[in-house]
Length: 116
Image (tube, rainbow, N blue to C red; front, top):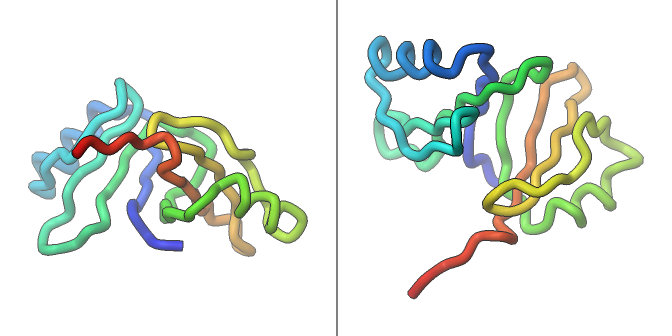
């Protein structure tokens, strides 16, 4: 598992984006529709801050795994999955809680296409 994003759920994406841009000086890295925006952190960090409309789920890390379906099958009986694997634009996605109820998200890039 490689940490890729710090995810902060929000009720109002526009207000959150304004806060992170104007108050903290972060720059937008990418956007997925009107529900998710990623921001570059300052310095040389490869990790990005992702804010998304996702009420009812706590803030937490988003980790890249090789295969979400495989990770789910190997761990579904021992981890508390609150969202089973589903498709998202770059690949597959799932959420599980740690022992304290913090949300941990996993993602793979199985639907990413790369052009030479």
